[in-house]
Image (cartoon, rainbow, N blue to C red; front, side, top):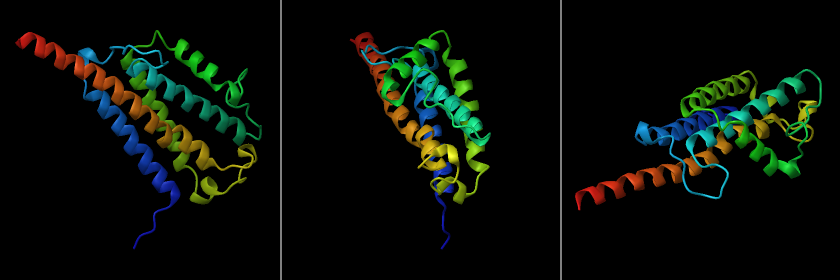
Length: 180
């Protein structure tokens, strides 16, 4: 029986959830993929969700780069604390309102690939051992990688399912109205 490491499980889950997320977007007719749902919540369309993930990938890459260079990275971002994460996420949303869905998909695919390459560059021990790297403090690389890939993608899948259902239900309503 082959033993699968936590690193391998992380890679498999991240890639599976990444594909599932993109499959949800692909399930919507291309002409409708930029539709925004009517909600008071921050993320109103696929672009918003993908750019949120992209920006968290970029932040992770900065933390990683600074940490591996021997610095203690400022987390989550300059001028923000974990207690002000809602403000940070709202700023991320505002920053990307001029990005098209196609641009968002490209950026997200590239950032996912870069983060996956970071994961693949480490041994299971390096990823799973707490305090292995000074910059992760009492945690391990796994917690940073999982939070910004597989686990974050689960959140995004749920958001995108709501958006896709809203759009697809609207399509069904139009078909029903046209046939009556």
